[in-house]
Length: 226
Image 1 (cartoon, rainbow, N blue to C red):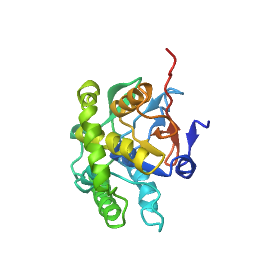
Image 2 (spheres, rainbow, N blue to C red; image 1 turned 45 degrees about the vertical axis):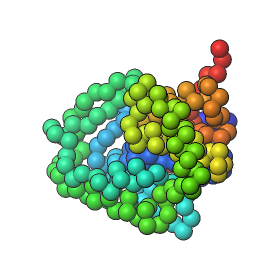
Image 3 (cartoon, one colour; image 1 turned 90 degrees about the vertical axis):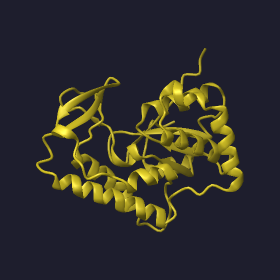
Image 4 (tube, rainbow, N blue to C red; image 1 turned 120 degrees about the vertical axis):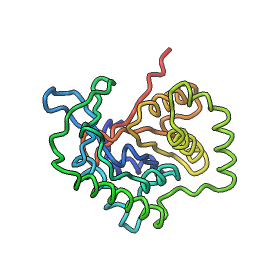
């Protein structure tokens, strides 16, 4: 079982790929100052590079990934405002740290990023990349969210995170093997909980982090011993 896959390789195992906003907008990179340490770089330049990958895919004839309605709303409402103090949020060892940005010289890049993000959201909506659940699937999603509502509080899931998880769980049963793609650690931990409890399996509902490059996705695994 390969640990790192491209999107095309992922789709060979999981025909349905659900990508959230965090994985569309960013990917984890190696810290240049400390080898083998992953950081979540939020600089505008990296986010532009990350976004360009899905932007190109959105122009192809084949739908190669999907987003949920909540992700569409986040993309189309992207803000032009720069983070106060021009600071990036990065993560080392699971902890958030603040680093001064040295890559963005003015607000122009931020405006370009916001505009590109909104255009991508609108294009994904118009070209059928937003998941459209059947009435039966909507009922199954409601049942899942009722039964596993406790995950929201236990892991601090946002509304969109929970929608991403519940939609993936439903699609994995109604349409076939589904992969969740995200950089949100609460979402990862919630998925691991479902795997440990036997609600889903690797083969039916996989989870990938966008890590190492614009088309590099790391497979998540769960230790089921004990």
